[in-house]
Image (tube, rainbow, N blue to C red):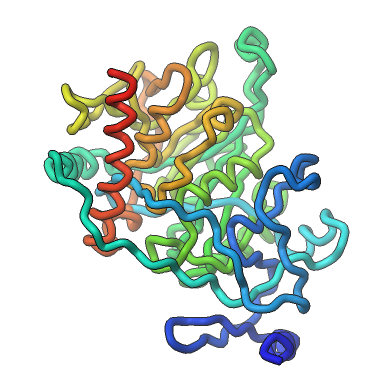
Length: 392
């Protein structure tokens, strides 16, 4: 009966979502919304056979409460700058037209956030690492993007293959004004295609994304989910969201970018051009570990040990070969270092300064400090473990 009532309410143009101890009644959006990140279908033969991707989305009108949960591990990342980030999408009408079977997704109850472990990891010097990173993170306040280019099947062919249109991947976690500024700059200063993943239409950012899609249907594809970001009290993890964008991309070079990163010129082409030969990734900002690995310092131009996730381009096949971005990373901070250490090849920062700047990094500055430090520490423990295992 509860499901029937929700359907009737939805037919009347409203959506009921669980919220804390009660519920929220919000206007029904004009775009397709999937219940979780995991439920967004990847349009490939493997997905149709059920060997990859998450569960199929529930048809609108036949769904009960939004269920399931996107993959949310126990990790995070490391940034003290000032800015935010976002993802990829299609308007509902376009999506339905290209996916036979009609309306596939439902706006159900937003997935409830899992319990957060309040335990503190063993310190073993990690606190000093967090403090030192605050210094260099602040100094590196920058931005990032995601793009994709056509890469050949062999290294030799890849060396000869000319760059094609890039794909920039954005995670949309709120702050619609940041999203608009980021996308407007991408449209103005690059030929990149844009993929965006909206997490929960926080602050109306999903609605803003849909408007951008309608304005630039040839440049932007977007997906919307009911799950809100883990770093904003929801259950959608950063790593799981990044990996969904990686799976949805069809380009050879995948460019991960944050919405706090703003182009002042074409910064995409230099990154894509740098990903050739034995170079598997190139980024705007690079870092190297000090002796012992507990502190990192800014590095580059040239070859680096790690790339920061504000704006980095990576060969998509190489990223997929190592399992993509760290699935356990619920929060971005330090997750880019963990990802960098898994890549099988060289990483570089281009010789020439890229025409980009970063505005307020909301993913760091506007997140609860206790949450930020806890999730950052969890991820950095994995970074240290990987450093120790490689002996570098």
